[in-house]
Figure (tube, rainbow, N blue to C red):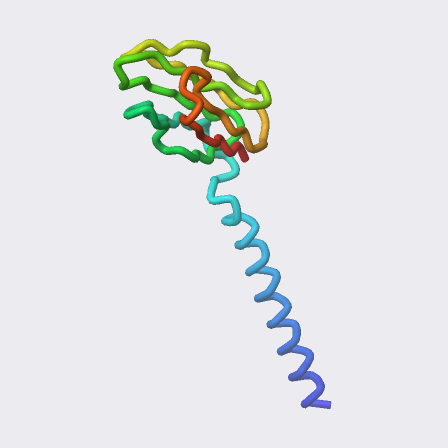
Length: 120
């Protein structure tokens, strides 16, 4: 009877540790705090490239594209979620994300310029 009681207590302890681990993993799984205020992120346009080429943000965050090249560019989502139209040299354009998804985009003036916006 004593041995059975010890086994049951050990099983309860293991179960409690597993529950705590699952809760902690869920809280840390996204890398974002659940109640974090919206953030602002920057994508530099320089040397006919988007830097960073891939950016991960949260819904509600703002992304600012800054054109450091001597000629205009666009940041245009392939599926139409956003379109900066022409961003003049030394100017910027900002977009506040609305919904989760993966949004590939490119410069309509320079087809080799591609980026991806991941919104969580």
